[in-house]
Length: 157
Image (cartoon, rainbow, N blue to C red; front, side, top):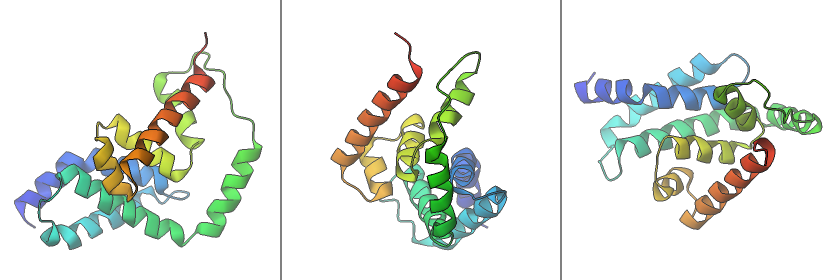
């Protein structure tokens, strides 16, 4: 295994784990994490450095997760319908920031959750657009809407 690959995985392990956690279905976080690592390994030789390594890792991890999710679309749709019927718990009470963020993330669709994760990790709008395969303007609109949704739901004035 090339040392560059090992170093890249060490540096990006948290991001890969976060993507796996977000997109894994019941209890398969470790399996998805391994699938992402496998895909990164398989495509490492084709990485030409035209983008930042973080962007490349996001793209591979996101595409691997999306491929896996396509296999369980029906189940996912049912879960989303059930989740949309539940009333969100908007009271922040004594919850810590991580709990509030987790609550907000679970209320988002997959694309919005990905945008939020990348935004929090400091990726630029163009990098997010490249990973998701959408226009920069669409990413900027999503970020604006996410900020407003979060503010409306959790901020008390």
